[in-house]
Image (cartoon, rainbow, N blue to C red):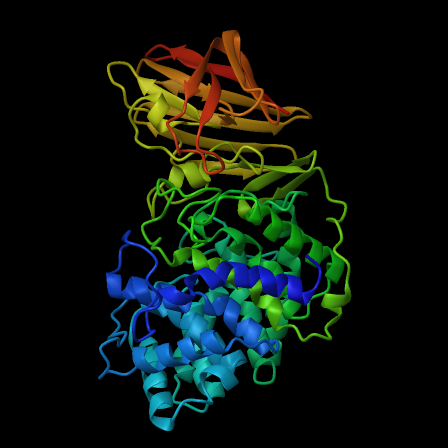
Length: 561
């Protein structure tokens, strides 16, 4: 994709299938029957809001779609009228509707001619009053604070009552999350994921675009930090356009590249327009090749195919439309030099790049990305936390697997993990999080415990062909351990798998993973729909025995092609 028309057409392919799925009053979008941690009325309101992440930039950049414009004016009017049957309701503390207010706020900031000026004074007051609820409620101390900031910026710009003091409190708290080098932490959580890119920096750059006249210093600071972050974040993208499958909220799919759209929207030029356009166009083209919609073209929950196993507790049918944030570049005027630039490949990048603030060591080889992780995460959270943060490696080529259960290996599918099965049971125990860790330019070290009485120190050292793992295991219980490689796709051309003394291999015409080390080679046939990239996979591994009271160091080599 090169022209503005190309990107606009991509947006329409994603949004046209939902046109006929709005409620009679148009204040809700009805996309499916699965649930989340919030009630059905909120699920419909969330789905209504999220397409605005694309439509608002489209309108701000001069685009017109009379049908969607009418839908969203009607929906805003009825959803914020307390006397209307489709009223969105009174919000409570920690309310999901605060998340969805941000897209509406951006509509008031950047496309007021579509969503504000056509409203009567009474309708404007209803909308402002409904949004203003955020100032009287408690929000999680994390990226959510930006929702309050954006809502109040919108109310201020539109001349409506707003809370300047509460806004300043939230901005100060957000400032306390900054770690340096362009990286934030998401509140109290130490884990770093796409929320740093499509939340902290994305909202910060929106704020910088909207409030530069009122707060030039803060807006300049947000731009400066985004520029620093970009120098690391570009390493998360493979040459084919795919991004690293890592962390939570992967159901937002192409939202992985939203930062780059905000980057050019906010005027950053550390990477050329051609580099950014090339990255964005390849990324969206890669997603076009995945099975991310149902047969009617509606986005589904999942990653490279529909998959509820890997979903979080907050993934409702409309949640994937969060990815529309990546269409922010449509706000650029037709005359912007970005539209004249030719898409370029990624710039030269280091083959091995440590991102210490993110607790990752990135390996780039043959156009693919592998991230070696220190296992820094909350032990429990929104679902499948160990699988999304605590594996030894994450790959654009091999993805990762989410466990169906903790029972037996094929349900646990512990790819890129050292999995323990204590004698006398069938439960599988893996790294939940690390107790201590260190990331250098050549290795990742971590100490962790999968089970009471088992202590492990792991050193990961990327090599030219894969990774050398050195585990020092001290165990008070007799157990069997499985040092597992990547999940390799099966039921595809060229698939074969083999295991023997000290080795196991699984391969197909496009992938190959070999595990070599002490012990007996084995193969784990992962349960269907556990890998995020493909529904069927085989995991090569070596099997190790540990006696009660034993301390031993073992070395495993994982090779991949």
